[in-house]
Amino acid sequence: MDKILVVDSVSKEYPGRMAVKNASFAVTAGSIHGFLGPNGAGKSTTMKMIAGLLPVSSGQIELFGKPIEKQKISELIGMLPENPPLYFDMTVRNYIEYVARLHQQKDIKNRVEKIIADLSLEDVADRLIGNLSKGYKQRVGLAQALVYDAPFIILDEPTNGLDPQSVVELREFIKKLAEQKTILFSSHILSEVEQLCDEITIIHQGEVKASGPIKEIQKMFKQGLVLTVGVPSGQKLPDLSPFGEVQTELLSQNAGEDIYQLIFSNEKDIRGELGRYFYSKGIDLLTLSLDSPELEDIFLQMTEKP
Amino acid sequence: MIFTIWKKEVESYFSSPLAYVIIGLFSLISGVIFFNLLVTYSDGILAIPAHMAQEISFVDEVVVRLFANINFLFLFFIPLITMKSFSEEKKLQTLDVYWLGGVPEWKLILAKNLAAFTLIFAMILMTSVYPLVIWGVGIRDFSILGASYLSILLNAAAYISLGIFCSTLTHNQIVAALLAILGVMGMWMITWGSHLHSNYLLAEIFAYVGISSHFERVLRGLIGTQDIIYYLSFIFMFNFMAVKSLGKRNW
Image 1: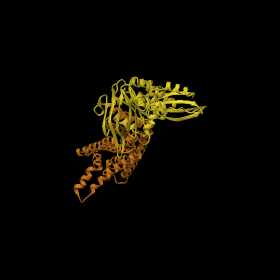
Image 2 (image 1 turned 135 degrees about the vertical axis):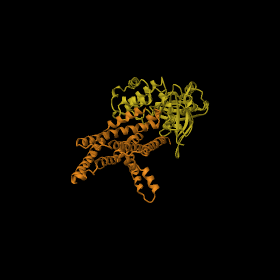
Image 3 (image 1 turned 120 degrees about the vertical axis):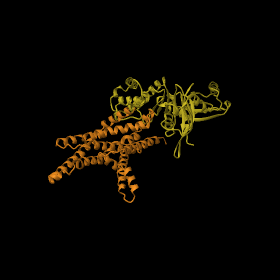
Image 4 (image 1 turned 90 degrees about the vertical axis):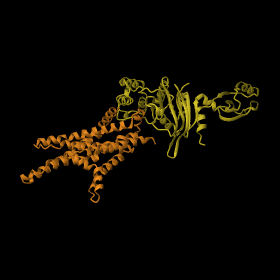
């Protein structure tokens, strides 16, 4: 598939500190690309460089096949920065209209009304932005990014600090938005990224640790076959050496069941054989399930302090 | 685009109480000054023999003094107006709206200059009742009134460019205002160097670089090309520095 955005060995150096080190990743057209990393990992800096708000110290960023500095990216990128650039003394409608004017749009009235409707801002359209709740402010920030209909949207931690209801609404909106646009979306909330994104880039301490479709990244971190088995309390696991090298770890003991995690170095799915093997040894198998590594595990593994 | 930003800025000025407080306070103080000058003038006329009263010029005693005082008031009023133009936006990170919109720095700065000038113009407009009062009491000597207004408008434009530049330097409005006050005072004080008797050339340079000598000439209707060039280069220089200062955001 086409890559809309290609970030090629980009670094950003602040005096005495490398905020981003040699970062490379690409965003596929029509995808929601999750940009994942702990706070201070360099997510915002990278996003600002992509949007042209910060110059790169080295490397190159290409959007739609052309370096960003060689084209008018203001019509191609819509961005919701971490702190939405809102004027608290303007009404929602006036502000959105103002942004549309700055982007020299035509048919401004209709555009503004459409975006107000899309983001369900009708009730607050004539109120001052400063008097709105955080959830509404975030939506106005989103309206600011969308009113000029750019094909590529950058959202920097859009759900940060919102109440659960607003978070759910915003996620739904982002999903809908992805039907028409490509979205680069940063977050430090793993479940959110897992839910929303098709592909991810994990960044830590300014370095890209992994990038690509979520499935592939999960595969990359699969260390053989991971099974969860449960046996009645008091019964021991049988000798598993016939199945090759295996690590066992007792995860929990409750309700009369001991749950173990078994990691086989061989990747072959041996659930059927294992079941028969337990049966032949006279051990009841209460639980048997196949685990794929959670994004959270991968993330924690990557962002562990060295 | 400049018009769009100008309009938004003017609306923003007039949607906050600050604009009204500033205009009101300015009108009050300049009104008191005007009243005092008028009383002093008429007392002076009455206190001396009629044939000598002709010697006391209304222009010198009232008009010139009034506008010189207004210039002094600008020292505080203009930094109050320009202080938030960029420092507030830097603090709230709202400038991203312009950079994401591909707005060039110079257009933004020009629009902010024009918006601040609009507010100052409204403020100065309040003083237009004074000539009417003077007319009402039968004084017809308005020879230099146009030049006087031109002089404070030019000074206002110059101070605005300086104030806006100061505002691009900091996130803090108060710091921006103090820097602008110091800057304007500095431009006045340079003129004092023109009293240097030991070095004629240096004294001339000080006189040219300082704003006061130009202001006084324009105020008295003696405007020359060098004054126009001075004001234009003053305004251009500070706006240019403001453009550079905003460009520096990308360090």
